[in-house]
Structure formats: structure tokens, C-alpha cells
Length: 368
Image (tube, rainbow, N blue to C red):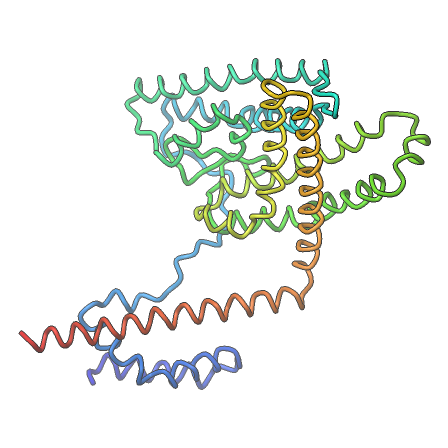
């Protein structure tokens, strides 16, 4: 045993003597029990020192109101258009919510709504602004000979297909940055993600809670409430559900744009993704039926849309309870403990694979 290893052990023993955290001591105890099994990995680490780099690489800092490294024309253009682009994308999301959640369709067929038709025209006109903005960015990048990051360019291109994705777009030259209200240019890291997720938690519970009176009215008190309001209650209920959809879509688009591991975020929030996608399925399905189907197919299309709406309501209801439980300490502890156990199992499997690899390398070296 060399002197460096002896000094490290002495330092660790001193640290253990000072430690009074039972959770940390339990981890050390579990590690010591596995010491013999992990011995081959220790031998492997002598040849591959990077295995000893166990420190966390997570960035939990909150860095906002950042300055740009380059002050060329492209950066100045993005500085000028960042805020209008964010709010314009939010407006496009609002128009999308109104169109796909409130079009009129019954067993007699598709009922044209002049207001929704005008919104569609507005949507198309604003889309031209996105097209112009895209060409300006490409032109400035060529003029300044600036390198646009692929991780920022692809989402920018996708906004031409669905403009609301402009919420949370990254800086073209510095893709680690995004523009947000109050925060301005901010670093997209775990710290910003956690802050926004925390800020969304309570408002989203309240918004998801709105589905309960909608379900009660639809199932039990529709006629009474409609006679009391003296208005078309179906339009009011559609507007409420459109607002709920808008909130879920805004949260999902913003957080996934900031997240570096988008697949994991989608996997954890699949309920929210289904809530967002179901109205699109209903809308596209209805338009296809209107174009090519007979009256009998229209009736089936109406029933399909009703079924999809019920499914979305159920998902919103499930999301409400899940979010409500997620803020309760007992539920959080059990959930986090379960994740910790899963992570520990996965880590043990990886360690076993490292042991096998170490033994294989040792045998291969001995056979030479």
C-alpha cells in the first residue's frame, strides 16, 4: 500500500469519526460489506483512473440575465426578437387551443364556426412571421459566418411545423441559453428546470382541479346549469377544457425545451403528453371524416371524438391526483425511496458487469 493510499484512508477514517449522519453511515456500511466483491474493480481502476471520478456533474445553479459572448448581428437580432418571439409563440398556442378544442362537430356533421375560421386565418398570417424569422436567421448566420448550433437549429426548424414550439427556444450560437420572462437569457440546466417545475406545481394542481366541476356538470347538472346561465353550456365547457389544455401544453413545451434529457422527461410525464395529443387526434380524425366519409361515418366520428374527450378528461383527473399526491411528504418519500432502490439495483448490475470485465481482462493479460 503506497503512502497516497494510506493518507486517503486516514482522511476517510477521520471523516467517518466526525460523521453523525445515519444515512451516510448506512451507505458506508453497505459499501464495506460489498468490498470483497468490488475488489476486482479496484484493481481495474489502477489501469483506468477515470473509474475513480465519482463526483456529481449536475449543475443545480440558477444563472439568469446572462450576457452574450458574441455581439454580432445575429446575436443582436436574437436579443431584439427573443421576448416578442416568446409571447408570439404563446399567442399561437392560445389560438391552437381555441381551434382544436372548440370546433363544432355533432352527429349531423361538421358545423362551421366563423370565429374559429377567423382564428385559423390569423394563425396562418402569423405563421408567415415565423417563416420570415427563419430566413433572417439563416441569412445573418451566412453573412456573419456564424456557426449555428444543431441543437438550437432543429427546434427552430420545427417551429415552422408547430409555431408554439417557439416557447423556450435556445440561442442559435449559445444553445445552453434560453429566454424566459423575468429571467431573460438563462442557462438551461437542472437548477433552472427545478425552479420552473416548482413554480408550476401549485398552479397546475389548481388548473387540473377545474376538470372536476366540468365532469360534475356534464354528468349530473348540465340542464340546471345551462338554464341558470342562459347560454350555450357546451361552448363554456369547451372553453374551460381548452384553458386546461393550454396550461398543460405550455408547461410541457417549456420544461421539455429546457430539459437536456428529453426522452426521460417524456417517459416521466407521459400522462401530460397524452392530454396534449388527444385533441390533435380528435381534430385530425374529424377533418378526415368530413372530407371523405358518409353520414354513417360522421356519426362514428362524432362518437370517436366524444370517446377521446372522455379519455382526456380521465387523464386530466389522474394527473390532478398524481400532482396532488406528489406534494405530500409521505408519498414523496415512498416514491423517492422506490426510485433509490431501483437506482441501487441498476448500479449493482453495472458493478457486477465491471467485475466480470475486470476478471476477463486479468485472464486475457495472464494468457499473453
